[in-house]
Amino acid sequence: QVQVVESGGGLVQAGGSLRLSCAASGRTFGGYNMGWFRQAPGKEREFVAAIRWSGSNTYYADSVKGRFIISRDNAKNTVYLQMNSLKPEDTAVYYCAATSLGTINLYTSSQYNYWGRGTQVTVSS
Image (cartoon, rainbow, N blue to C red; front, side):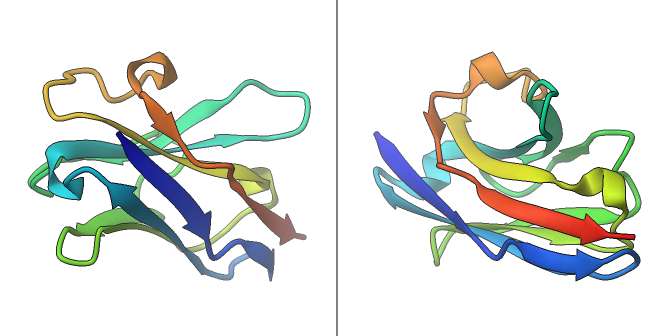
């Protein structure tokens, strides 16, 4: 089992940047694929980005491609989400999640076993 805790959210103006961090503890962090999801008020949780256990492959939602970058440092048990050129529609609670390295589909929230409590990101216009 792995526990994950997000940090780095906050209020930023449109066009600005934020970097979210997700610190993991418990079982070997390198044995998990990691993902970021978000949920805006009144909307369902949606996929944002994911990264394989080795960091060799990354995946992005079309809405964030070219603006967000997911990365990980297995030595620090941490995954990051660098968010650039933020838009008001990026406003949401951002969640970090972990799934076993055997998981193929990293786009679907139901594939993830472990979730953090989320961190609020608010982008003002």
